[in-house]
Length: 295
Image 1: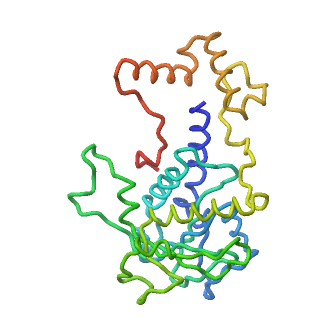
Image 2 (image 1 turned 90 degrees about the vertical axis):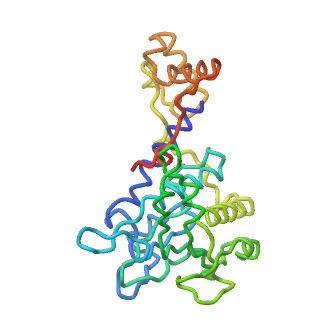
Image 3 (image 1 turned 90 degrees about the horizontal axis):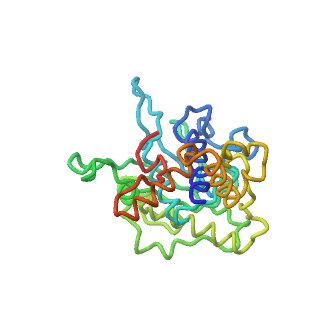
């Protein structure tokens, strides 16, 4: 059953990352002279089922070969995704594109705000580790370290009428960081600078608070069948197998008995992992692409 959840999250990641790594036709952009995105703009649909918006300022973007600031650093998405999964203990709710945030790439004519959002996160810089600390001993980049060192500004917008209670940063005071050379010169009750890891946890906890307060309004648990993994050979016509992890697992076992373990990938890999753990060997783990630093 673990594989069923894994495949759903993996397919979700493959889809949602286009909002972060794609072109401006695939993501939300603030580029008009007024810098104010109206509530019925065609791109506002990107914010559906997201907790907030991440504003990526010019100072946090990478340039193109012509020098134009355009690219959103991939580590921002990868680290955010990992921290978000960490909040859910590796089993996040991914139905209907539910995610912690949607990126908003700010052009030189921005920024402003998107209507109806109570809290926004602003990236006004990008953390670059010292050259001798870029990689861990295993040769990979630690996304958790990046999330702990990348700073962001969290800002209350005052749009809180739909919330069960006002947003407060009081509990974050001990985790707040110096303002530095960002957008804010003086500490403010509506703006606070924290690490990306702290911001993700704060937004996650805020969403959980609202889900408990108004479960019927904030119910995001409705199942999305489009993320369900395909059933094994011989079960394609039984649609109910797609949607339930236990039924899907039993179908794979039945297919393995009929066609052989080596011909049913999910069962073969599971048996290999179990066998490796029994004899003290390290088996291939089910790991999502963000952890491997690939796009």
